[in-house]
Amino acid sequence: MEKMHVPSDYLPILIQLGLALSFVVVTMIVTHLIGPKRKGKNKDIAFECGVESIGDARTPISIKYFLVAILFVLFDVEIIFMYPWAVNFLDLGWFGFWEMLTFVGLLLIGFYYIIRRDVLKWE
Image 1 (spheres, rainbow, N blue to C red):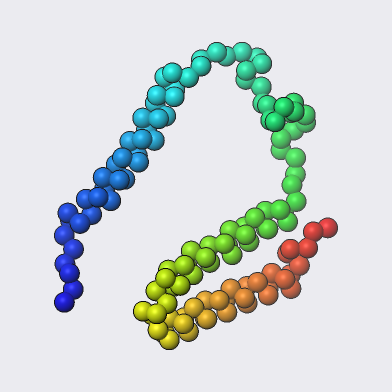
Image 2 (cartoon, one colour; image 1 turned 120 degrees about the vertical axis):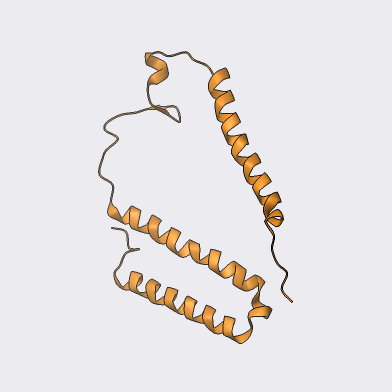
């Protein structure tokens, strides 16, 4: 017999969500109130790792960089789907096994397409 879920079952999740959101809001407000307020020419310039900025920040960047970054995210997200499958492997049985093989097969087809299009080759 299935257990019926009542709204009070979700109370701990709502409390944790409320505490997390309130922590973020309070932290942002407090740091804004007690943080330094000195402004000036030297304070407002861009500064990165001890090196002064030279040139325009809008220089063109190769599209290959963005393709590799997007592909990394795409193939990294597959782990999000594989982890619950691995945790429930025995409960899912053969059906779950074939479903995961289908999923991995589709990913490999996409990876093969990426390799054939030379997306990962740098010039």
